[in-house]
Image (cartoon, rainbow, N blue to C red; front, top):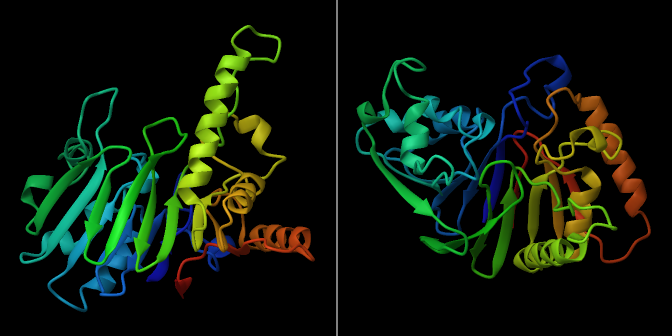
Length: 295
């Protein structure tokens, strides 16, 4: 498989001189299977330049997997040009919102209503297909299979494990490690802790031995106490999951929009120093627009 990053920011696009090297677009990752099938993870603003690149080989056939429907993961879809061209075939996969009871088609269609956008979803010219996902589903795309697991975020969010010919990539843009909401002296603490331990264990097993683990590392350890419950992880929590699961590579993504390139460089140097001399640790990377590698 080939993996390429087109958007790596979280919450809101952050263009400018201070973010030019790592990139200011929000989440979008392109995966090409060994047979050339196109799998796209999330439709943040990074999907716009990806769409322009795909126009070089028409017709476009692609499968887009939406981790969740917060703005920074879907706001680029109305600007994904392949959707406007007859003959293209686009499949969009995602969850049904359990609170409002709206499926992925309805949720994405809402951001293309006339009060927000000049072209409605029903006016798109491509062959557009929507697929509802549940936890545990396995979707086949050519020579690849995509598996789903629920993550911890304020809206229903999937993590995806893509497997192709014995190799694997795991992605979840947003995830906060599960914590016990009760103090240790509360009567419900032990019961809830059992659920926490089970959830943590399931995630470790789901991503075990993955070749590449791509995960939300939005905050530093110093920033996190003020952000508890916002649904995001830290560099440390992402690295710990990668270690426990024996991942070969770990890629930190969903960068805080105010974090500059220089700050990311400093954090990466700190991570490398912490891993120095250790055996069997994953190879770390900071996600950057244009970062591309084979799995």
